[in-house]
Picture 1 (spheres, rainbow, N blue to C red):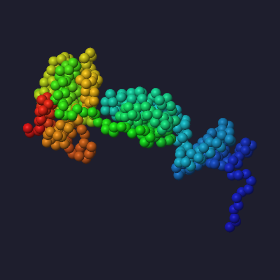
Picture 2: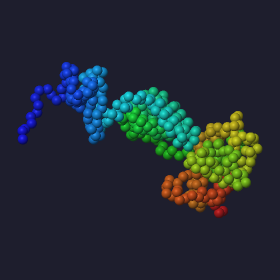
Picture 3: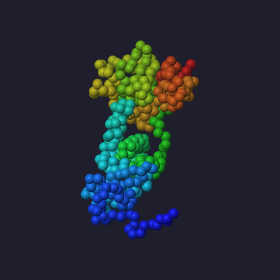
Picture 4: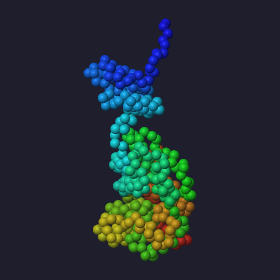
Length: 406
């Protein structure tokens, strides 16, 4: 067999010259090096292509006509494609991405919000999602192209709120992550998500406990006595007491409508659209809560809401009502939401009620999906006894102790 020798003369790379290109008139494909080819069509037209392996598959990528793209430019493009492919990238996808208008972070966030709007549990949550970015993120990186934002930019956003508002910072990080994931999936980013790993370089929070500050349950009766005599409006006082005696969330009480209350059956049914879990929640009403609802009925007039606003009767009370009441009473170290914890501690320490009954009273969803799928009951009658006992305890004297069956 005749031995092949390496060809002499010009290096295999960059074979062409401008004169040689003009001389190529025979239809075919002619290699220049680095995957760059000159293609001469049967019509005599000449064009550049890059040929290489992208993710294990041979592919061709057009680089333009020789009348528009010079030899030097074609070589530069071919070398760029080759490097990108060897690094695991996709020159074709990058070409598509580069020809599209890359949105700013603000535009990307708004598009994500529009596309996923129907997935939000309610309109308020949807509005809060975007407003949090408008307030804390857009002023810093909102006008940057989404493909140019790096971890340092995300760090700058989070640093501003990380210590003072840890829960806000966590939500912002999660929401930014969703936007960057969307941008990458849409072809607007080719790099990793810049939110990944950022929290590792942020300072640790002094208090890792993110639970709402709660009043110790033995002090609840005294608090209710003080609440009833404070200078808050009657509507606010009664709404706050309903919140405590039903162990519900602030928005669930403030948004309560008369159509949800069944006085005869002593049941308040909150629709799933207003519940954190997205599921309807039935609450057995004690005599004291029924009394509070009866008083509210006399004042609410034709309002749809059980506790309408002081000035605008077609809207519910402000969600600042309970916070301002706590401040008036000098209870600055607790929250209205914390009374749910007060109830839960009382139930654990002063009753023999099973854990499932207590958790259902708080409308907590079982984390075990298999268990939740088989457990279809809401333990309503057992909860009626529990909530009646809680109301007796909370509205009695501070020394009163009531347990189920007592």
